Length: 369
Image (tube, rainbow, N blue to C red; front, side, top):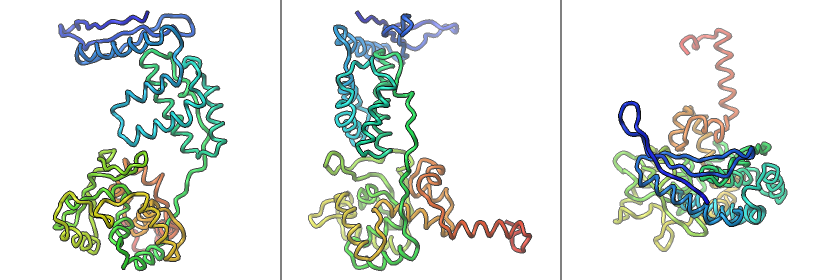
């Protein structure tokens, strides 16, 4: 029978400590007794946690907890996750984890078993990035099992996947970007294509823009919502991170284009970019439409998302600092901008090399640099 209790203790200062919930965990491999302890600000929270953990354990006292059973229960409890993230986790569980590990007792999992499964699904043709995300989902679930006293350790944390080949974004040159903008000047989605290329906003951020998010006086747009596809449905939600919620400055031409759109709308909650029926654009359709338009322009094939990479790369080439590019792209840090997205253009690298050489050669005009 699983046992547990709740308590608090008086500190040396005379004050009371936080409330603690303690539950018996399975004995370790050395046979020693183990307990899991968590602290809470109130007794009610401690009682709720203990009741949930004791209930989970009692359900399985008569037999082993199977991986499928635990994963299904775990994903149901992840109420704090965003809808798209939860759908992604559920896909990993249903498509890869349960079919390969579901019938095994969860306490029988080893690093060797998990590695064998990952080698198998990698052989199915999954990208290295997808395999890493599947591993992350399993590891998160098993960490929760350790915290709840179901496992003594997380075997997935011991796995180190081999480095895969990173995706290298394709970007257009300045001449190609100019050619694209000139080609689409008469396209009904010209404001969208221009905004994407100049600001580097994500597709969901562009399509989530409302009339109220554009300030025609200052020429600024506020990223407050994102429009994405979840399980085949197009949904609008808040950005994931604090850095993603940001204000982006526009050039005068783009600002004028958006002002014309805003002036034609009475509903401030209306999306800026609409389809023929007056509804927000479908993200998938936008990406497909972009591919067609770029091909008609005779340009090298790139994804719609690669306009973001192109914007960052060309901005850097024109003298924007990494910090400035990072802020407008909404990256979590300058390191992300430098390492993952921005390819240093050859022209900029040559200019930097020449500037350093000129300085070291003692040429005039560089003393104050």
